[in-house]
Image 1: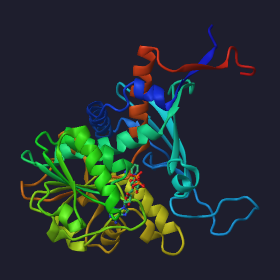
Image 2: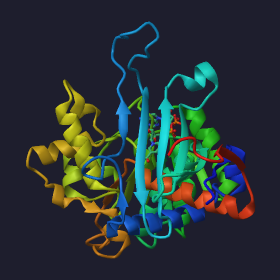
Image 3: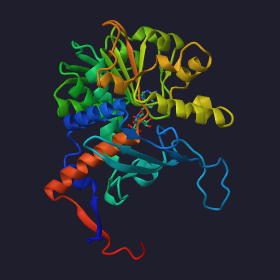
Image 4: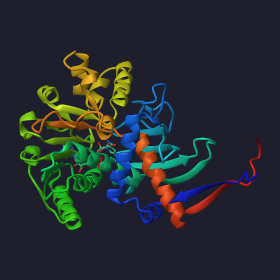
Length: 371
Ligand SMILES: NC(=O)c1ccc[n+]([C@@H]2O[C@H](COP(=O)([O-])OP(=O)(O)OC[C@H]3O[C@@H](n4cnc5c(N)ncnc54)[C@H](O)[C@@H]3O)[C@@H](O)[C@H]2O)c1
């Protein structure tokens, strides 16, 4: 009996060589992932099987001499999940996040690892850089939204925020919107919007340019993607959005009540968002304000909308419910990120790397010491 356990270690360079930056492939992987989600062939954390992850909350005041304290985007988090179908892998994304990292340490705000396991034995098969997985799958999920939720004649997009996630969102919009030709970019930091536009124009060969306001990025756009940091939560007015527009949200945003009430709302996994709401309701003080898409939850708590009004993206992808009720309906697509997306892309890159002989094998043991 061969009891040896070897783990494939994939550095960020290995991940790139194995194809993680191929956005067309990432969107296709998310397509399969959401189909499995719609069929129920997945598990995430907690008793509901839909929990986003386990988060460590730092206190406002340190209880030990070196204990970190609460701050913007300051967290440690583990996202565990199983994804079925051809993936048939379990996995964990484990990360730490500190908004001061770029300025103080020259590091990304979040530093992430993905671990892929055999679901039968629990044996770890691969450990890999999770930063590229996070960015690529977050973008790909918006591209998937564009594939199913934009009108077929969509040509113009508005991109809110000129950060890393918006780069992958735009690449993915280009995959999901075959006729995309013009992109307006708004960031509260104008220089970032300019640099982003230049870089993405060279990469995608589209007419991409910065604009001076949220409204300018949204007006006349067929699709809008927003991925802002928490520096300033953007406020979107319903009348800025043209008939039939698609609005893909990767991050917190404030939307007027009439916008939520009049548009179609599609979620990556509403049960996960319900889980977040339950957690927020158990937390003290103003937790509802911090809850992602809190104004939507508030409408439901006030009885103006029902949980059942939210359409599940998995059901749209598997064709069980229509993407929109008519061509003029505006669709808001809310995403919170799921461990199954990390497992899907991690599993795919692990297989691609193993096939090409990429990465380093790390031996855990030849024979287990105890069993
Ligand atoms: N849904 C998901 O799966 C998922 C995954 C990863 C990250 N995210 C979220 O995406 C967001 C962006 O992440 P990132 O790594 O690209 O951050 P980043 O720091 O690289 O970029 C964020 C950008 O947002 C800009 N910004 C902030 N407030 C703004 C506003 N009101 N209007 C316009 N621009 C504004 C900032 O100037 C900055 O350029 C974060 O909130 C993150 O939590 C979501």
